[in-house]
Amino acid sequence: MRTRVPASRVLDELSDIDAANVARCARVLLRHPLLRPGGPDGDLLPLVYRYRVPLQEVFAALLGYRLVVQRRFARLHKAGPGAGAHRGEPGMTPRSYAYLCLVMAALTGVGRQVLLSRLVADVRSAGSEAGLAVTDDLADRRALTAALRHLIGLGVITETDGSVAGAEALITIDTDLLGQLLVGAPAEAGSAAELVAGAAGAGTVEHAVRRRLVENPVTLHGDLDPEHRDWLLRGQRRESVLLERCFGLVTEIRAEGVAVTDPEEYLTDVVFPGTGTIARIALLALPDLLDAPTRGDGRVPLTRVRLRVVCDRLVEDYPSAWSRQATEDMGSLVSLVADLLVRLGLAEPDGDGWLLSPAAHRWLPRPDDTPGRAPEPAAAAPEPGWSLFDTDEEGTP
Image 1: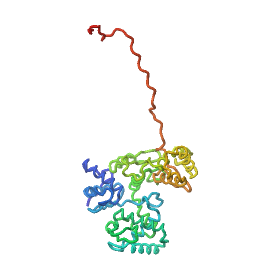
Image 2 (image 1 turned 90 degrees about the horizontal axis):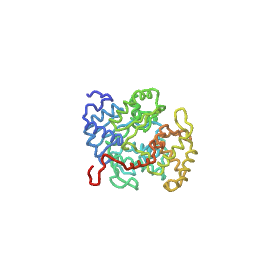
Image 3 (image 1 turned 120 degrees about the horizontal axis):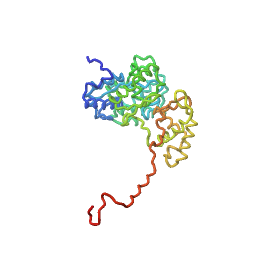
């Protein structure tokens, strides 16, 4: 039985090359917690399998995560986001997530293959048993299809014949992958809230704080429990070294908290600043949005009316700079800008409005501290006179 490795020494016994490979694999697993051949970055699965022992030590020691590695897949059991999370899988709505849970429940009892019609019937039956209002309208069909597409993307189910978007299809289930999806233990939870809390499992103080640093772009001291905040304040420099060495992440320490960035933007699912209309308007709106009184914790209250006024002004001042489709519905544009700021960790919902994080000041434009200067006048040509290097007409000094 191997002795547990202290967090500060997880890569000490490896050569520089091996340590770099472990860090590379760790980044891949953070980005794709279910790694498999044919999926994103699936070609690195053999390398993950080769370094499975040090990888398991890294995740266990630093984050308290369990890593399962087999030749066919690798599954990093990350902690769930817990209640109040604002980010999810692109294209998945709350209704889609509800259907995802129902589909997973139905798949556990159908074997390795099932017809789509049978699966849909089982899903509706499971929904009725759970007390959910399951219908057959267009919105529910789209939510169910999104849930099935998500499982196809993970490799859990395969369209063997037909399509899940059609009238009928034969679906093949990878039961090994299906068994690895859930982080929490449903049998041990007495309610949905207990299941969510169990999956989020904070663990030790150091694990809880490091998870926040790794999984979120901004961690404010004011958002942490006193014990967690004190631990982070005592070891911010040490944690900066660990996160960069093991995951390639760069930390920026400020009085209000810590911002963590990935220079390669590989671990970033939302790139900011971005090139799209929503991202550019969000960036250009920040100076005006932050030009307001702050609360004691450094946050700036923001109402929907104020955000609408700033967005309207940007669209009117630079009409040719934006996508016409994005600016046709200003109400929708305001919602998308706010949603982007929330997903970036730069804002959080607060009643009918939001609270802008102190970290948003990071994106304010700064004047150039080395402004251009007018060129100095050229030195005047020396007046003619005798020089040590003068020559006479014959070329002799």
